[in-house]
Amino acid sequence: MSVRGEWIDIDIWPKGRSGFDARYRIDCDDLYCYCKGTDHLIDWLHHFAPWAGRRERQGAEMILKRLLPHIPGKAVKIAGFSLGGAVGVELALLIAGEVRLTIAGSKRPRWRDKLKKLDYIAYKHRGDIVPWLPPWRPRIKRMVKIGRWTPLFWRAHLSPLYREVLAREGF
Image (cartoon, rainbow, N blue to C red; front, side, top):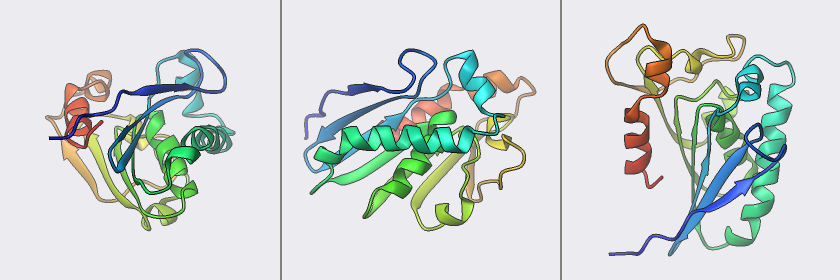
């Protein structure tokens, strides 16, 4: 039985609740990085902003700077929820080598064609509208649908089932 490392928080631009947040931990030969989701009104506005893709990429680059010293010799596993899913995709694309990516309730990333090259699994709760945002980006294919459909999209998006699937993957 291995002992799990402690999570180390990464608070990046802008600092505080309105910025991207992530955390990472090291377990023996594995490096886990979790990109947190929307937790501020500015983050919700981000779903529709024309500069969103550039901001997601910048967030991923800032997270990568913190992770770089720990990557050599590690199996990298990235997860993201909601907005953190789009940042997680950008982060996985920046890392040379194999990366295991898990996204849950993620907004649509910019690069579906590049996503196909990654080892990923994507979860969508039935009734969650966030995986449909923004509507002009191509949708993620091969999404695993979880939960029962509900017209209350905020309940679907905040479903404990997302936490369960992420926990099974080590997040």
